[in-house]
Length: 196
Image 1 (spheres, one colour):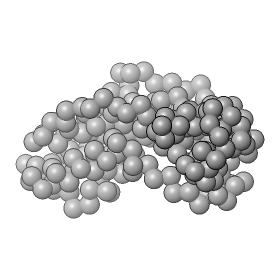
Image 2 (cartoon, one colour):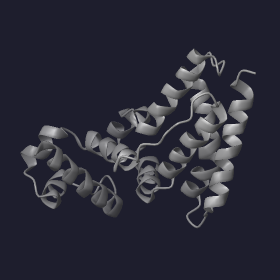
Image 3 (cartoon, helix red, strand yellow):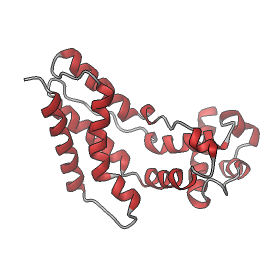
Image 4 (cartoon, one colour):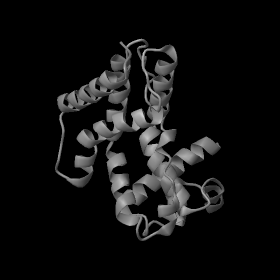
């Protein structure tokens, strides 16, 4: 029941935050739209900032992506698989719209600025971190700082796929262009870190 309530709350919150923005979305309205009591909402999300953060993270991780088989022993091939999953995450419509809300409204609301937005909890990012550590341990890659390598890889993809879309409302990218961006990012990281 708690999981069902949480899902309903996050769905209602996403709709309302996108429709009215952070400031003009009262928690009572979220509870009403979700079909739960205010007490139920506050039990799971004591503050609006916590609810908003959970909504942004849910947009990136729910529904859960289909499990993908990540090749081992070939750093480039594994990065391509993970990069495509990240690309899919970045192109979800709610992700872009909610990130616009974060950027537009956080300077008005200290509680939003104080949230960490721990995107590292997203399944694809956890899988990437594990993959790079395992590649290093197995000797197929020489990666002293997997977190930095992850940030570099994801940054290359986001620069091509996400940021232009975030800042230019009419900008678009084809599936082929997305695949090419992922391929180039994977090739760059593999060239830098794969062991001979």
